[in-house]
Structures are given as structure tokens and as C-alpha cells.
Image (cartoon, rainbow, N blue to C red; front, side, top):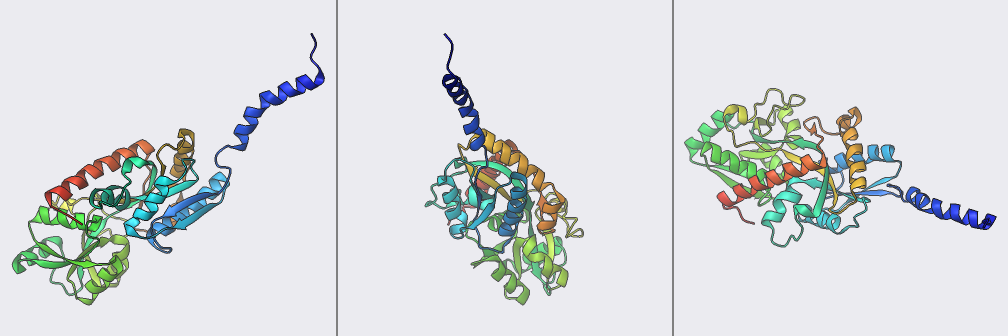
Amino acid sequence: MSMSRRQVLAGVSAMGAPGLLRAQSAYPSKPIEIVVPATPGGGADIGARKAGELLFEALGQPVIVKNIAGAGGAIAASYVARAEKTGYVIGMASDSTVLINPLVVPEITYKLEDFQLLTTLYTGGFALAVGKDFPANTVKEFVDEVRRRGDLSCAMFGVVSSPRLITEMFMADTGINLVSVPYKGENEAVRDVIAGIVPAFFGTTANLLAQHKAGTLKILGISTLERVKTALPDVPTFKELGLNNTVYRWFHGLMVPAGTPKDVVEKLSSTLAKIVMSDRFRAGIAMDLTPTVMTPAAFTDMAIATRERVQGIIKSRNLKV
């Protein structure tokens, strides 16, 4: 029995429909949102905007940066964890937000496993800084001076934060006692170290670099595995000075809700890997930062290992919110 022209056309239409639907729904087909757990203008915001700019060029869809500050990044992370698992909401992942805060803040309901990590964007270190008139120009001289005094005040922001953790590592390695002086933020702490109100501080190299170069404070050592040759080539790492446990890299990366389709995760992670290693991304972030690419699996393994280490430090040093 012969088929009518209408039946043939209907059959062709039916066979073509799934492919057509797939083409229409191919990712991405609408704007993408990157959620940053900080106010505009900071390091996390700048990195996210540069990544978003290059992601737009690569994928052909607008990338909108949404700033959700507050609660140490917990509000933004909760927003991402609850978002649809479609790849249209990407969150900024940091060690403080996804590793430390869930361990120490009872009110936080999300955990690392609620997210699918995509890649790190860059990593950085913490530096020990003192005022320009402090009687020490090396880590050894600093430790000797603290021992001579018995203890020393040290500016601190965040009750249990990555700067607090590196301070605890340093004290455990050296056997000295640094008395925490709490601050609401890093900028305020840096200001008082420069003014001589507080003698010492462990802060991010990004916030200390300009003052170090201007001579208003002195950076004595950094927590990265290798020297920051692009910005602080003459400053030694704690590890090379024999402080083998005072090693810590904070990270900023990108993540989506756990359960996001694998093909979307693969497209995002592979595209972002090319972006992070590009000269344009390198030029768009601070010179003390290290562009760092990790596969989703490697990023997850690193995050889990870091969480275990952090958990051990919190327990051994009895740190509480």
C-alpha cells in the first residue's frame, strides 16, 4: 500500500523532531549567571568578570555577574546549591566558602558534596607582614623577637578563616604565641599594621603587595609552595625556611549545583580551562595570583584533601566560632 504525501511528510517531521529539539536546547541557549560571594570591585569580583567576559566570547551567550555578599560567602553558596541543575547558574568556589565555613558554622546547611566543581581559576598565598619599624626583616628575626617578648599581637579577620588557619600553622611550626586581635575585614587590619597599632598580620599577598613595595610594611614570608616570582621574587616561602606545615594555597574557582548534566559540566570545564591559561585572563588578574587549571575530578580531590587537613587543624587547635 502506497503512502500519501501527507503521511510521508508527517513521518519525516516526526523523525526530525528530536534532533530539532536537541539543537534548540543545546547548551547554552540563554544567558549564564556567575554568582560572586563579595561586593563589586574586589579580587573575586574582578576574576569572575574576566572569566565571564571570555566565557561569553567562547560560548556566544551573555554572562551576567551577580554579587551576593554576606555571611562569609554562605548566602551566595546557598543560592548556587539551590539553583536549577542546568548550568545557567555558576558559583564562585573558594576554600573559605565551600570547605571551612561548613565545618565551623552550625547554621550552614550546604556541604562540598552539594556542588560540582568545574575548575580552579587561580590560587594565591598568605604572607606574614609587619610594620616598617618592627625590629625584624626575616622570619627568623620575627620568631626570635616574639620569643623575647613572650607573645605578640596579630591582626586577624574572620573567626575561623583561612588567615586564621595559616596563623595557627605558623604558631604550631615555630612554637611561638600570637594573640589574635579581631578585625571585620582585611583592609582595616592592613591599615592598623601600617599605622603601628598592631605589629603583625597574615594577609593575602594581593592586599599587601603595594604596601610592601611602597615600604610602609614588610612582607617576611609566604605560604605558597614556591616563591611568587612575578610579584615577590625575593620573599621566601615558609617551607623553604623549614616550616613544612605552614603551607597553604587559597583558591578561587567555579562550580555548579551537584547533579548538573555531565555534558554541560564537560563543556564548561573544558572551555574554562582554555580561558584560564590564556594571556588575556593572566593580564586581567592580579600579578601575585597564579592562574591554575584543574579538571573537575582533580579539583574535587584537592578540595576533599584540603578539607580533611583543615578539619584536623580546627580540631587540634580547638578553633570555634
